[in-house]
Length: 291
Image (cartoon, rainbow, N blue to C red; front, side, top):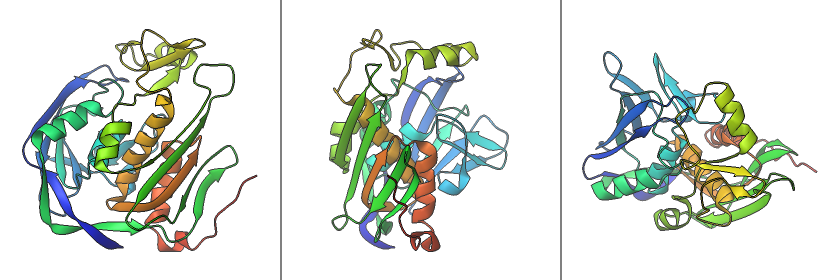
């Protein structure tokens, strides 16, 4: 690991309110400045005592369709869009106080979090930020779904995602690549929204999930396109997958530097790759190629 920039926090308190997509519960989030080396820490203010959950891959638990963390008796769920905002803006130290386990879904993107954090302002700190540079090729997944890391230009993070929903729906095949900086994240990724197919949304509702969420709150596709909604980008679904990657890579607690290419992967494989980045023995394994 080496350093190429100073650590950063926010200049004041920022607030985002909304409701959780899965639970439907109202939730208030407060972002507070934190000292150098504090990292991103979630504080469950609704639980007795001080229940703190550090945003690190070692605290990740496997929950379908979202990124969730647990430490002790405290959980936080659907943190990926918030972590994407913090990681994309290179905010390294922040205390995130929440009064529910699930983060607000807002419009399914990171935009509300970015706007709140920008309003609070970003402050450079004296300490150096650690970075983790990919110096060889390695991969997680199989022929149907994979993510791969390889070296890139010095001090550069390049993400690329290929999405393939097949020919019988409006999502289809999409691809998007980006050199990620705070400026490019704000411009190209922050506003891209969560998406799913109509039959998936109907299955969730049948399970009692997402009862408060409407077609206006995220992108739900039928054969003709998003229902009661309009795309912000022609390739918004692929862009949102990159947004998720930014959020999951932020669980490395250091700046991942390299090129990350993914095909039909999701949160689980993203996390496996982060664990590989942080384990020198894992990096010594050769890349697994798929046909």
